[in-house]
Picture (cartoon, rainbow, N blue to C red):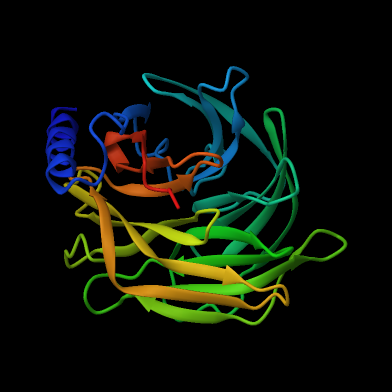
Length: 305
């Protein structure tokens, strides 16, 4: 905990120096998990609380053994979080790393495993039912996925996902494709394009260049990157403006990545694996999977126009 408090102090000071956020605009880290089985591997916005002061989000956990928790719900307010388990009904996934709400389909989500299986879920109350699942297309040799986002523009839907990369020798690979659904519910991907991406920070030998992505309403790609020295840390991470995505009326997906990504915030001692731009707000909800040190969430104003 002392290590995390030191990281918070350093990150806050750095953000103030860099002028990446107005004074007082950012939240503080709030603990939502106490061990390696309860960290945040991915986030999906569910809706606002009844009073509008908080948000409900779904959280995936990267657990691998049968019977371990795969999905939870966090109700997040500044200064207070509550966590409740979601029962998984259907084939049990291994190593869930990302989750995203399906636009225009209330209560439905796509969740992604590290090896590239996509699960379509229907969430009702405290139960998530598997509707169908399928592998991602165009999986590359050695790909290890931690990022997934959906984009709805011009009446069309597209998916973005990424191999996380590893240090200087392996940049992340960001994939993009049109997305539709078969009548029985299976996700179906169109022609795939891909781009290489290198994080501006951190730059450690084991850097995961893309540990999660989210897309704003205007098409900005907000990305996290992270460094992990082991189950007890030290960790390091950052959130950056990675580029833009557009989907044409014909369904063509175009991704433009920044040659030099703009670092929006650095977060020493935390391993960010979840980034979710909150609709109707400039805020991003950030989530960490700090292995044996648990999981934390906070908001930062990274998702403006």
